Image (cartoon, rainbow, N blue to C red; front, side):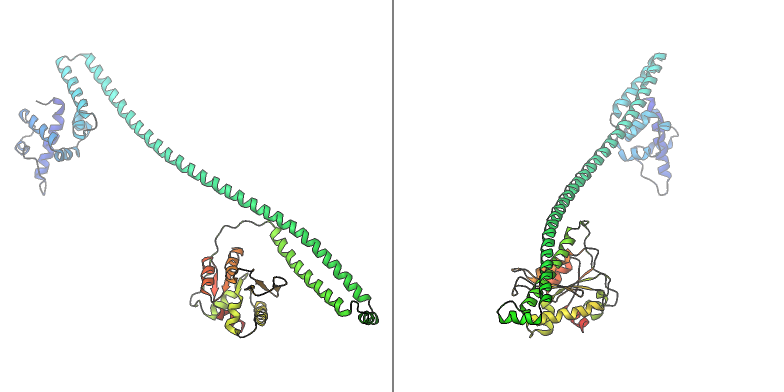
Amino acid sequence: MPSELFDPLLQLALTVAKRDKKAEPAVSVPARVVPMLTFTKVPEKAKDALLDVLDSDSEFRDHVLEGADERSVGRVGMAFLERPDGWQEFVDRMIGIADERIIEPTGDVRKIERKLETAERARGRAELELSESQRVATEATGALASLQAEIERLQNAARHSAEENAKLVEQRKRAVSELKTMEDVAARHVAERKRLEAQLAAMTSAQLATTAEGGGVGDEAVRAAVDEVASTIGDVLERLSELRESATPRRVVSAERSKLPIPPGLFDDSIEVADYLLGVPGIVVLVDGYNVTREAHDDWELDRQRDWLEQGLRNLAARTAASFDVVFDGADLPSHGRGGRHGGVRVRFSPAGVEADDVLIESVSAVATDRPVVVVSSDRRVRTGAGERGANVLHSRQLLAMMG
């Protein structure tokens, strides 16, 4: 005969089975329980059988658990239905206490029972607190790992920034040193020019003629010397401008360049796109020099091609917002006295052993990322390299059309 502690559970199981039998559609009831459905209360002789069904039929037991709580079936009944860890020992202990109470119902037993119930409640609370503490500890461990990873990332970024700053400081020191040297050279050349101009002004026509007859330095020689000094001063001043720019500290910009969006309805290879891009304020146009000139005048001499393109770009710069930077292949030219900036057009030549294509592609990255860049070339390698660096690209024929 089961302990009387199971009576509330068994009565609930009988009630659930009756309800399932009458349900529409009817719910399956264990075969061993069907004969008990005619009873209002569970007969004493049927208690063992019904408890055995609850013990062996997990589906029926879970179904009964859906309508059970500790108030309706008692702590023993809930432990029997839920079956947490150690439930069997708990049920046996509670049955033993109940049996002792029946055999010897003393006040001490009730005190012990109350202490046991209090201890069980304390144990439940402790288990809940332990579970919560473990959850908090797990979350804290994850947060700590994330924090350590972030600290390491910031430390690496700081180290990289320090290295970059050190490089910039060293670069500025070199530029300042070279700037001072070039300023001294410029001062000497200016003084020399003034001296030659004063000498030329002091010489009369007769003195010049006499000097020429005697085999001395003549008017033409003096003027040639003045012109050479003036040309040298121009080169030095341009170099000074470049050095001053490089000696000025710059903010390191890490953002990547993005291509300018093309207005809807315009095609990439159209003249309208070229006209739109060259009108963007602050636009820098990098031009593949010989790629453009050979498409227009391949039969001309190279120096004539260069002069023609430079003049055409000056005219175009005067009526657009663009600043032009032309790169020619410099392998066949002397290494001195080449290039310069005039009328919004800068002309450069690639160093010996370096193709103009490489100089042009690398020049995209040299322009500040807050300024838009267009590269003009029909060479596939140049167009691909420029596009990968965030520049818009135009074909040479589009620039020629803009030049008229």
